[in-house]
Image 1: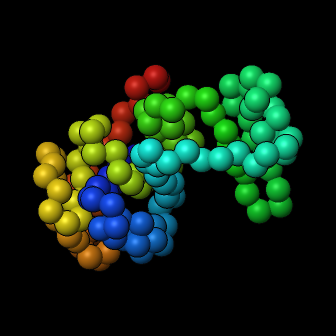
Image 2: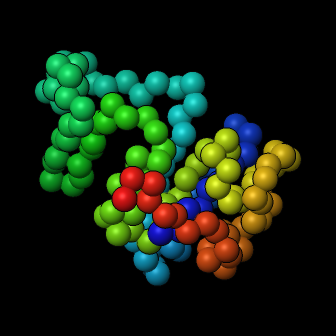
Length: 141
């Protein structure tokens, strides 16, 4: 699985680029994403059964409807999620904002970073360079 990490300052266009690169990658493989929420906290819907399960102490819970599954994990380590994605056999993990992890990356704006593959790429440039990004080897295999 390739990790395509896209980093940049807030409002630099990371999410917009991701919405354009995911469909391109999906034409050649399976794609999953991870978004670093920073200081934002994702609120679980109050009073819903999946929230009640989490509050009761479940380490992992899932809510499944006719279109999707939502997982809630107590673990907040990006590598746990990458291990899960690799185990699932996905081809590409598009990651937004984990600049401290040292993954090879595409940088938007003037952010200083290491392991930069591209700076301010177009979706087509990013797609063309997809095989230059780190291949992920599971940590907990």
